[in-house]
Length: 278
Ligand SMILES: [Zn+2]
Ligand SMILES: [Zn+2]
Image (cartoon, rainbow, N blue to C red; front, side, top):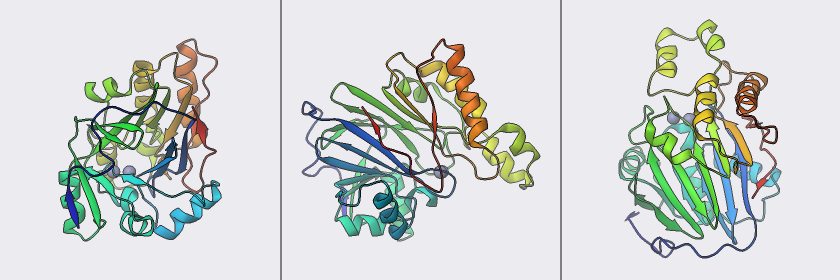
C-alpha cells in the first residue's frame, strides 16, 4: 500500500482553466450510506464510498454514469456509512483514495484501507485533477473528520455532512458557494420522541453528533449567497426526519432571506438525485 502525499494528480495549487460544465451527482445520502460523484473537465471524483461496491456500481448505472471511470476518491471520515465500499471500489477502478493521516491509520488498522492511499492535512488545500480541494476539520465523533470546499474554475462548492454543530471554521468554508450540500439530519421533535436509547439521542444531539433541520437553517442563514444556485440537504436520519420537514425548514429560511429562486433538494437514502450542473 502506498502511503504518502503527492502523486501525478497533485500538482501544486494552480487549477487549469475550466472547459465544460461541472456536475455533482448524489448517489445516495443518509445514515446508511453516502456517496457523491463530482465531474469536470473529463475528471471524475468519488466523494465517500458508503455503499457496498456492487451497490455503488448499481447506483452509478442508475445515475447514467455506468461508463464513467472514477479517477480518484476523497474520504471524509472512517464511519462505515462513508467507507463501506471504499476498498473494493478503489480496486475496481484502480483509483487512488485521499484522506487525512489519522483517518488513513484508522482504515489501515481495521483492514479497510485501499491499495493506494494518499494523505492530506486538514486546512491545507491541494490540487487534484482540475479541482482545488480544501479539506477542513468538522466537529463529529470520528478520529479526524473533514468536510470539503472545492474550487473548480470560477465555481465554489461546499460539501459538509456529519456536523455536531457549525463552528466558525465550518461557516467560513461554506460561505459564498455556487453549490452547497449540507447536512439536515433530524427533526428535533421526532428525535426526542423516538424510541432510540437516551445515549444515542445524546450522541446525535451533542456537539460532535449531527446537524438538526433547525441548525441547518441557522447555517444557511450564515452562508447562503446570491450566487448559490444549488442547495442539497443531505444525510437525513431514517427514523428521525422526513424530507418534507427538512425541506420546509430550509425553504422558510431561504424565504426569510428574500430569495425566491433557490429550491432545496433533499438527498435520498434509497436512490440517486438527478445530476446538478454548474
Ligand atoms: Zn459519521
Ligand atoms: Zn455519516
